[in-house]
Image 1 (spheres, helix red, strand yellow):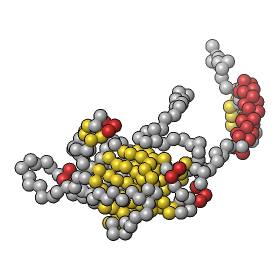
Image 2 (cartoon, helix red, strand yellow):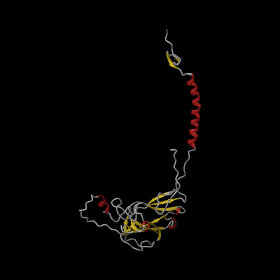
Image 3 (cartoon, helix red, strand yellow):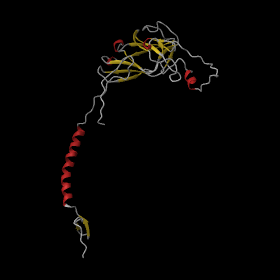
Length: 257
């Protein structure tokens, strides 16, 4: 019997002048193409329309200023150091992060040996930091906050001689809202009293000593992390700084990711 071709065989058509047969689209394929082409045109026009109307969020007016430079430091107590009018010109000029125990870090990372004779002495007690700064008048009407990313162990904060907060944690960062205490376009004075005495009694810790936990949290003393000045609109996303700021909020979990 002669060879029978399957009905599913591709229909062929001669290419003029070539003597070659080329496969020819089946009717169903042509119908599919006629259906897809208009859809492709619609999709292209829709994409171009969406691209031309892409949402552009407004520019953020939040400002973050690094406050690490040009601090004055005194490694002893002075009850008048919190005052706005005070001569701190004789104090040591330092930048942050800073500690009154520079050798403490080397002692901490060195191999511990109880028999090793320690020739370095560390300071434990009250110290003071002061910084002058001026806020641009254009920032008036916004919320002004200070972020202290690390202090050992406790601290008291003053703006222009007024107490604005207390820190009694020894580990976590903290925030201070100073909006109602600063002047715009004029000199402001930030004063911070730091106490790294490991025997200090903490009122918010049942008048007990902080378990500052060496070697996990070495008692370097001082403002030993960055300080940032945050400037934001009255309605703004809160900062993750519960200490002093006490920030809380409503959080939404999007599961359609």
